[in-house]
Length: 163
Image 1 (cartoon, rainbow, N blue to C red):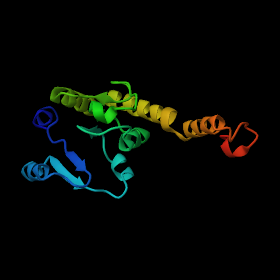
Image 2: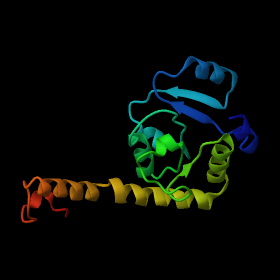
Image 3: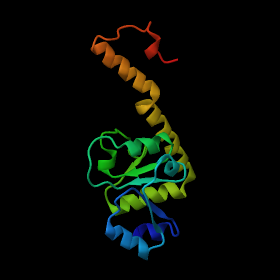
Image 4: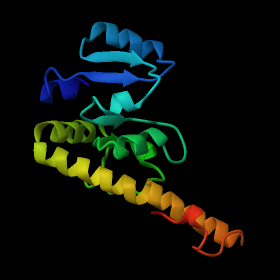
């Protein structure tokens, strides 16, 4: 955050979620550009108001639903390698993946300062999420699973035909 303050003075870093660590709460008390929002009942409200979705996860496994949600809302993301794990994102195309503080600052700053980069990544996030995680993809995967289980073998049954 100190490096980000130099590059983007006045930008606010909003932290959402439950069980915020005490050291982060203390830090926020001393820095007005670090805002602890806490838990929100509908994360969609956050996606619709943030310019960049930053996920510096240090532990975790599998696909992160909130990252897919941000992509599906067209919010450009800056992610740690763990946050991007299992999603097959193209760095610099679908999202930025950062490990070092300088990489985080460079990616966030680039999205804030270059409207074309932001718009391109927003569009790409929408395309990526629809192609990989959209309704049509779900129908396709369900059809394949049912065919493999020999439960559903034709498209005459309209239940799994995308219209």
